Length: 342
Ligand code: Q9C
Ligand code: ZN
Image (cartoon, rainbow, N blue to C red):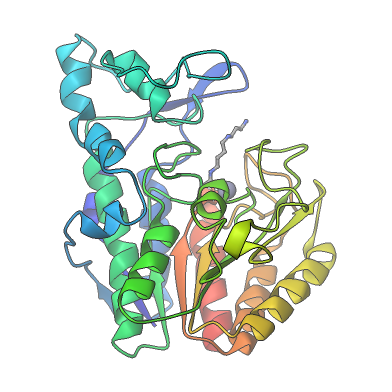
């Protein structure tokens, strides 16, 4: 299968992140994409193509135009305020604070458009995130043009980003942008299967009231893991979307054997729903040596994951999400792709 990737995606290169009460070296870093790209080459997954440059319109189908503009203009405003290092939000308009004020200060804007303090923004974040979304859109385009599968080597990732906020290392919701694009260009039923270790809160929220985009997510129980405030089993959709969201929160320590019942159930939902396209939000952070996660996948389990998804028998695009054990990331990711291709 073809891999889509652009070097522009490497331009977002955060140095540090806030976690566990410390400033630590960032884990969502350019070498993640580089090692996956290298492994795709070495193991001859297929041709590597550059993304098309899409206009902003497909982003506006999913994200608030004012949010996109905020990201675009962020660095100019940040530096105009005399700051030169990467930025972290630190104040949010939560309960009892006013939601209706026109925020102008850059510190207020950062809180208005974010969900956490763990996601650094830098000079090139916007252009890298745009390129990552272009990579997802190009993979969607490949499917519309008749390919049976494609791999979008997205980075920065997307599934935590929502209608008007960034967070969890994510800025544009690549999977959501690709899903909406497939809808806008003629497909009627899209399924998104999110196998990242963390719940895809952004993707779920974007499509929560819609029956045309099924959202299935298997992840660490938010009772014990980020994002803490979404991803529980009782979230099944609302209004016309009732029944078109499913969550399988699993305990910390879950290994492949304890993961497969959830995966089998998710695959059964796919069989019933009969999507015209499947988008896999492919995080590799269920891996046993992931530095920020608590599941116990072995590298070989990623082959099994790819094999199982092939049996679903639907045109599929894989979009990279998380996965922070950089040394093993290329192997784990290409294991899925090879497992899928058989
Ligand atoms: N103490 C994705 O995998 N918090 N995002 C980590 C660790 C944020 C992960 C805190 C995790 C976000 C795309
Ligand atoms: Zn993750």
